[in-house]
Image (cartoon, rainbow, N blue to C red):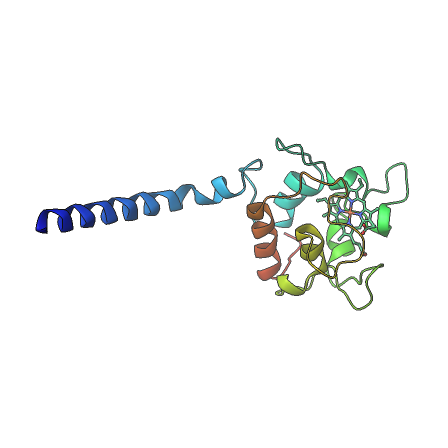
Amino acid sequence: MPRIASALVTIALTSLVATGSGCDEQLSDLTGPTPNLTPTLTSIQNDIFSAADASGRVACTGCHTNVGRMPLAGLNLVGGTAHAALVDRSSVAKPGAILVVPGDPDNSYLIQKLEGAAGIVGQRMPRTSGPFLTPGQVAVIRRWIALGARND
Ligand code: HEC
């Protein structure tokens, strides 16, 4: 019995160590197809709004651009315009909803649209029936909002 107990402790410790070392890699693992994604608007702009990724997820600016068209939903996510278009701005479709509420990711309609939350008006984004953002990509955008949604 003691031998089994000590074997169990060894297994538990080994998995703890494995989990611990996994932490270092976790952010890039989590953000998957955009391993360099960090919670700044510049990073989110470059990796999400303006760019497709290896998962097949399209760029937001395929539709949300003023280049050669009217941006869909009046939302221009081209670099240099996204902060003003999102932060403290009302949704055009859902009365009372604010696209990005600094410090409050849960109440930011952008997050609800990216997660396909219950109660959104229209479809989950990107409006292509997927691939959608990974949970890790959304977590980084949530973090940017939690940190104050700065124009950084
Ligand atoms: C294929 C075109 C298309 C793509 C790509 C797309 N959108 Fe949209 N988006 C739309 C359309 C059309 C609407 C309005 C209808 C709806 O909400 O379904 C919209 C609405 C939105 C809204 C709500 C605006 C409001 O005022 O209510 C947000 C936020 C949004 N999109 C964010 C994004 C983000 C972020 C991405 C990229 C991850 C993205 N969209 C990709 C077409 C697109």
